Amino acid sequence: MRVHHLNCGTMRPPLTPGLVAHVLLVETDSAGLVLVDTGFGLADGTDPAGRLGPARHLIRPILAERETALRQVEALGFAAEDVRHIVLTHCDSDHIGGLSDFPQARVHLTTAEARAALQPKTRLEKTRYGDAQLAHGPHLVEHSPLAGEAWRGFSAARELTEISSGIVLIGLPGHTRGHAAVAVDAGEHWVLHAGDAFYDARQLSRAGRTPLSLQLSERSFAHDWQLVRRNHQRLAELWAAAEPDLLLVNAHDPALLRRAQGL
Image (cartoon, rainbow, N blue to C red; front, side):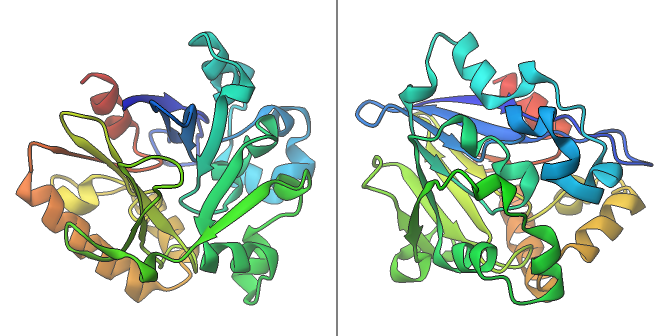
């Protein structure tokens, strides 16, 4: 499968060098196009207050139309209808804003994340999940990674064979109740998109200090901070191993996006 690494949402939070919304566009042999997350969408640019709420003042997104997944898919010569599946790491607005640009796509996520988004329980869940991003009634397909097998040391993983072999949903709760990572077989290597399981590569490599603003943001948005720390430890082990057939990326680190685009 061919994997494109897209930035679908530049953000400029205070006291940070800038963030991205790293989205994978996967060309499969039999299932058309698959997106891993969507970043922001066209509707976010036309109604930022209604769709993003007060959080827009914190993340300060640019919301450029050319950065939306839809426009980038079209720039590659495809149409919206070619995107037949979308796999979500989680349902925060900066990850699912573009869902409505692909209304025909089947949207895959963990059962725990679907329940959190549709039936929020905690104060944080009621704050982080909005109705606007799901108002178009997407076709949600729920999965339980716990019913799957282990993948490279992660105990809860499920290959999404109903989409294509080589796409694996890995349960990594912590940032949200049902947060997941997504692994994609790109041929010569695997891409592991860790979503928001970590914010900055320096958290894994220990090469430099992660900006305090990012550390505070990660802590404040964590559903379970102890699980987040546990995920950091496992991902740091993968980073240190530097396996040549594994490319580790996340949702928001611009340096990791640039590295992936340069391969």
